[in-house]
Length: 461
Image (cartoon, rainbow, N blue to C red):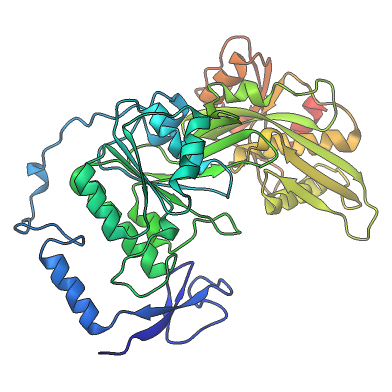
């Protein structure tokens, strides 16, 4: 019998090396190489023979011939609605037949809860829930707490991909849920479950099942310490949609973000609130995030960020205090720390706000993370307000990107943002002067154009 060979594979990017390396030469990550065992040649031959005879790697039957583009028929795709508007929004309007969806997030964030709630969201649909980390009793207890009690909700405690495939072909479910991809293994691969090759090949098998049976499939995935989806990056390329749960364990709100979606808008978000009986959608997140705002308090500003197709108004809080150390602290929660450093430099150099001897703390209320540049102006206003201990105008919303020269740059979809601000009762909006061309502001909202950061600060502080 041929002896199995070993190789070392980077867990982040899949780079292979003949020996262990401390740092990956491709992605630069440290300590990500793991040893994997290559299957012997005889085992590979058996696997190829199984695939050729109609196994899991490919279907039996004649090979398909290439088609000219004009001969490809387009049919109307009916989406399967879950009845939860926030979930349907993130999916692009509902589930499509054969969609392969990866759901990732921190431990305890609500991934398994959401997948179990599918039994309540999709009444009458046959759902096969494959659990590789929990026993059927544990899933049963969670289902009872969530109010899921249906004979159409099937449980299978299995990690062997071949056995899962047989169960799928036997039961023919309408929806398949696998929790989680890191626990699955294929017996023809001698690596441990969770390794790069096991995750890649297990996902390929599940994707083949989803596409051939036109069965929507959800796969739960783990994340690394850096918040990235664990396993090879090819996993994210293989799936149709990548949904990531965001949120703080100390807050009850969860944000489900579409990082990739072949059937809808990317960076779309859905907002949920975690309660004792599961996740509940928040249909008006802007109003929720502003509900606890203190009027007349310094260091507070409201920004309007665009998440996919949805404008979202959130409060940014800042606290500036004299430093007690030689090097001032800069701490950001829900905002990029490096971007904060840039804004502080622009505030000091271009707007005359002395911050080099002060600690600066910035936090986005509600556990939301701001990644769009349109939040720059609001963050700068909150910092300047806290530094002077002068409240900014509570009825003003700010949007605009700040350049290194202190100029306020234009952002996209200004009209959509202003409509959301007017709907929530704001009476004034600071907008970039360059974005006023052809702008039709909503009634009741006074639009104030600003060209520089110094001019914006004089307006509201």
